[in-house]
Image 1 (cartoon, one colour):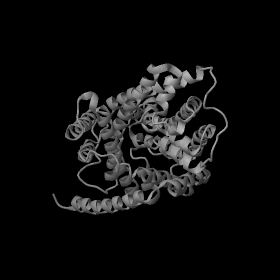
Image 2 (cartoon, helix red, strand yellow; image 1 turned 90 degrees about the horizontal axis):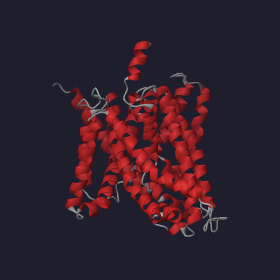
Image 3 (cartoon, one colour; image 1 turned 45 degrees about the vertical axis):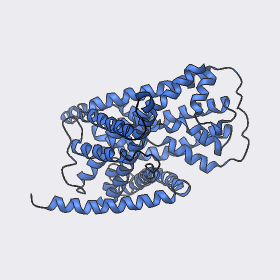
Image 4 (cartoon, rainbow, N blue to C red; image 1 turned 45 degrees about the horizontal axis):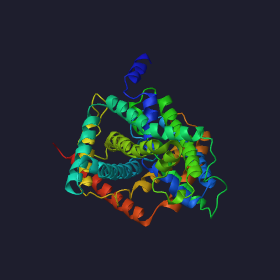
Length: 426
């Protein structure tokens, strides 16, 4: 027992750093624009209610990740859960879709970040910005390769930096005693489900916390703390920010930069500029977090025997360096397209699969009384599955379905080829 405790103490990621990872995953670029998108579907104070109700609706999903995350002290999150509950093939599919989606999303964020910073850096659109994006990808990958302890300090710092403008805006709003020009009862038709779906995607990100469970100290406590804590923190922050936008901006639904404009309303031009600059810092935090966590999906797939080439191997600093190298190369190739339009096509399906598969895995393991679970734990699964199905029914597009099908077929072909390669004599 003492030896096991000592081993845990050497793991590179602490509880607060894991919490920062979850917050970094949730509080991304989307929240800088989501207040207007939600208000377009639920005008006025109804949009505030949407953000609060959506956080509560996602609580069973977060609980499912937290309950399973504390019982699996290894990296991989939904991949590990699905493998234990249903076997290797379902685990491969959920992990593969999550991996491909993360590659595409990371590429999109890096292309967008380079395009936004390009003019200030003197990079012209086209080949120069693509080279800039490639340099960014390479720099982040090299930083990740130095070790998970350094990466944890980096994402924690970036999370703090991205939160400062948002917390400053929240404080300015809470301390402001002037009447809100946009407050009052909602006017216009309220589309509750579309508004909730928009808010749901602003909240996604807590599901990445168990992906690094094998690297977290006292993971049986830190994983639930970080999973539930990141959602709770984001829920409170988002409700305050949405209130601020509703009170400051009478034409909120038409705003192209609602948080920056609210910052100007409450704190003058300086706060507005600071909040606007926070978009780029937030994008950098998301990009780095993805470069850290995405290789761990690939390593988890390799541990199940689905892939060869030693992709599951971890360095003594907690980094799956071969998986990181493959991820770096794939992101590097994708950013060369220089376009963001199609790169988020899998994100909704990937999140849906992780939500539903994790909830179903909890039900299956609880029914079989494995991992210290009892049938009483299965009550969490039904509302979590309903949330996932709601996302699919109201948010998944035909393009996402086609993209997911093609990705699955590609993954299946790759799995067959890699398994054959693994069986081949050296």
